[in-house]
Length: 351
Image (cartoon, rainbow, N blue to C red; front, side):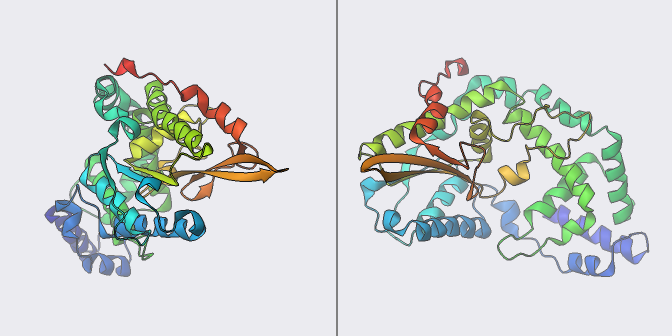
């Protein structure tokens, strides 16, 4: 917190000396910025905005499906979260969104379903803590395109101190984490960057996550199959009239990245590399797995010529994924063919 305030003061001083190219209003906005202590001291807790986001997602879902999701009884739902405070708080916020104070989240640890990578030794050794996974991102940090951005930020702020790559990342994080999506209130820190700067810095983050969580490492797709196998079982029980009305799991963006990869979604024809930024790439973490991102799958029962039929639709961040099946609507056979190969997923390689 003190470091952010110190940098803010340096930028203001630089402007007063005539060294900065920021406009007066941008500097005034920085002057009036006050850091939220919880952003630094409550790293493992859910922010107020995070609570509102999860709460309203559930509220919108209930409004869309009122007959299904009103007056839920305990056997008709399961809200499970991974074993982290802010994830458990997210599940609680989601449950609160249904407007039922007695709706209690499942206390069972579901890491083995949503986040099998947590206990996967091979993943931690070969992927998460493996320096090679971050080589492409490191390569891009040496590219002419990144150097242009770095120099532009240096000149824009007019700071006497030479900004390091870590400094640039910290400023980028301040821009991202202090922007209010709920109140549509931009962060004053974002004024330090042009639109092009932000796209370049986003690519660095994408390179890291592409190899750590997604297609850049085949193991990630295998780990993402585990939750899809659970989805198939849940829907098979629902078809027989034995399932829950809603099953909601809460985890980290790593889980979502792996699940999308297992489904083969948003896969670029050419792998992402640090050699050249792919501007029109499909894999963009800011769109796929940003704050409060969610993947929903809805099973609908239909009457076709007097016989029961079923359809499945996937939604990413509440928007239908049309690349799965025709116009995004899967018949049960199409859904089963897509998912059944994951039914007996084996991750024994973890040990």
